[in-house]
Image (cartoon, rainbow, N blue to C red; front, side):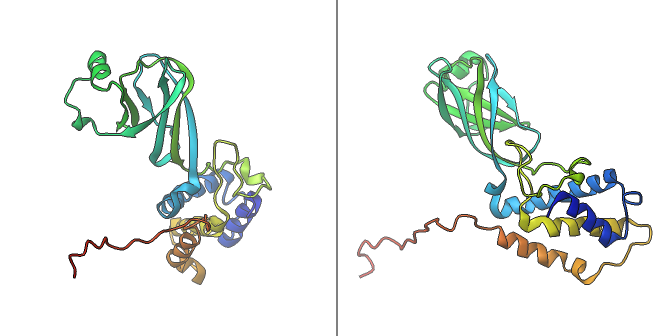
Length: 238
């Protein structure tokens, strides 16, 4: 579905136009429902919205706030901290409660010598390593799941398909979810009236149809091999 088609469809089903349902109102409704649906899609197949974020390392700084558009937990962390900030190292997660030392820089450097670990605290990434943190351009590589890009008033006039990535660092909405997204907006609009507008049969089946959409998005790689296992037989059963 194109952005223009999305706006036309919503207004047709709600019997509105650009005056009675303005672009600003449509965008606000659509972005709320977009985030709700994206959360459900991510539970089913989070990699659909996977993104690689690059961020600068700052000298002597161990805390880095998450990007504002992250949808769920991160998948992997790499940082250029080895060999004076010239080599990426893969960091593994740990919890600060497992560390008995202080967060004084000298104690961290000693306790985490030869280690590369991170903790997530107050919506930030904390790097724990024996290496000194030096300033490196794009020195952090964060693999995470992001929300699809927000709808904007300008996009409502676009004939691009809504599944196309708006930029190299943002996601569109999968094509399978376009109609259910529009339907969610229509339902919200109808229910927002002082005297709610009755929903039609298709709108009443929203929850069931959303499950069908999620099932359709479950697996994108049909070449994946799953190997079954059986319990090890040590002979004790005979």
